[in-house]
Image (cartoon, rainbow, N blue to C red):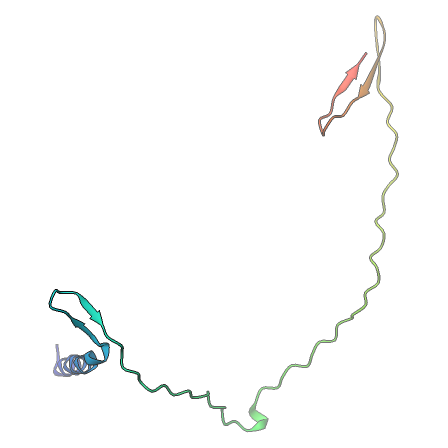
Length: 113
């Protein structure tokens, strides 16, 4: 540790000890800590200063973008015509077997007679 570090630590300790009275807390005889009303330090309401730049060095505000306000309606959706499906007819040795599609609540069911 050099001499500069020691001085720096000493200055921090002194500055901290000078700020202790601003904390305004004290201990009572039974050991509880009481926080008194802190000192009212003046607050400076300073507005941020405008940068002193010449007008030719300031950034220019972007021009507003022109956007169309009325749009044409979207094109109608093209749907292809649905093909009608016939029930498959299965020929067996005993005769014709006809199957029908019976869909209930999203479940596909084929009934063959």
